[in-house]
Image (cartoon, rainbow, N blue to C red; front, side, top):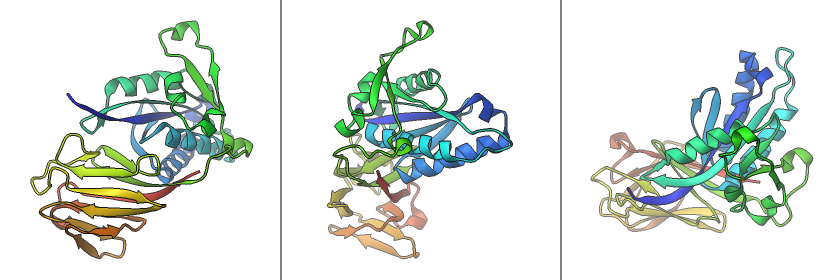
Length: 279
């Protein structure tokens, strides 16, 4: 089994009071999902009432968690209940397009250690954060019952306290999803490879795909698709048009669908992409 790259798993769990009201749970879920998708994340599923979101990097997860805490704290009470959430995230390996089970299980255990209004992460993940974000993290004690957990850090919500991380500038990201696979192109990872090879960022099974079919590159805030294939790459955009790219390049719009080697209408593995801004 080949390990290709890493991803960051975030769990958001409603507070005990929030769980008692379906309306408040729904309001929280809408806030979490909207922010996750706007910051490059992919909402995967609900595990025991906890929303699971996958991000391409710890920075993206930390920014999303900060925005979630700020937005949820600002929500008006629903059914007389003040909506609350606790959040945890952890970074680990991706194996053949899927996040490793150990990473998911650890992130799930971490969220059970967080208090309402708190975001925690493992010390190893915190050490991977941009220095501007690490400024908002601090070590926290682990309870005796959680002695098997790794060292933990609490990450404050800078959106909530209204302080921009020093030295951080907004980052344009392009989020790509194909089934349960997620890849994000940004200044942190400036080239994404799509193709049949196991070490591609998005791995395709279709025989219409070349081994390294095409790349998507971050170019000064814009995103450019370059085709290197035998069969070409099809890009469907919002107005319904479909562009064929063959051994050339094209700038991608803010939203659309990439089909590998064949038009979208015949593709079994469409790759949807969205532009987002991480602040």
